[in-house]
Picture (cartoon, one colour):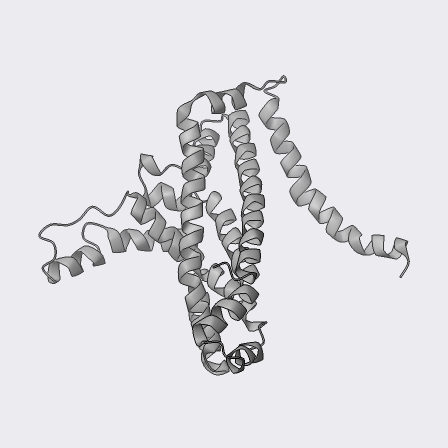
Length: 277
């Protein structure tokens, strides 16, 4: 195939990339430094005020926690599904996909029903005699984490499952024939082969968590404010340039953390392959 023909094949993807990613990102950066004249005031405001630095750190911390929890829960679930007969796998995957067809807003409101003072959890605790009065579970960091994990967990399960289906189980049997115990075969053969897909799912969940604003806004308090909530607040107040600066910071933090996570994932994969874990 000629070089010019290859370029024509790349043209549609390049145009989409420029139109929907590069151009909006450039316009976002332009709006953050021109108000209407060139200024760095908005970025200086972000750096000099500790409240904004706290929100940035909280966003990263919550997103990492959600990504790790989804991985710790999703990997065993995906492994269990992968061991089932083909027909049962289809049924289990269908059950996992059902929540993804529902709006995030609806799923968040469902958590309000579950965790409210008269919600299902408090009613069950009262019936079992474990609580004499309703517990405060809404507007807490725990409620935000629980809802975000529930919303994003199917993505991690499906990503892990997709990676596991590509693994040839004859390799596990070969390891057993050569004397490896079941746990050794899983740790030295299956885990390294599925690690790349698992880390990809972790990165995807982290990236999506960084942009969450509905769930923290409805289930959390002021102490759970994330960058996306700040952006929404500034847009409502028509502070377009400051909102754009927050958007640029969110983009830079997300890309930087993704690069860091991928680098850490590669180091972890090498360590696993060398038997360091």
